[in-house]
Image (cartoon, rainbow, N blue to C red; front, side, top):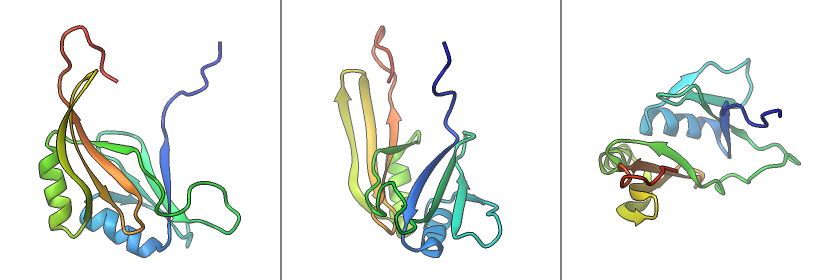
Length: 137
């Protein structure tokens, strides 16, 4: 049987203003921007602890995919989501949902939600150790 998915290379987000996005992702989130080919209106950022890139570009006319500001559900890991959310706020980021700790069938999760300048939403989350015998998602 052939594996359909062998890994995750990149997550791409459409933005309206690439320079504004660059400032947000470097200055607010502190991500390291990788080189961009030529004068392409694109940006790519390394995600710490992974080989996955967070990439973005201005959506071309007729290009498929989600409109800028409609992405949600991308989850970043952090051991202290409250500290991460406070630092994002301190650096000028917009917090969508304050940090909360929730009980889920798979265990306890602490998370907060922030948005980039276009309104694309990201989650900062910590999964607490699950009760014995319960698999982690």
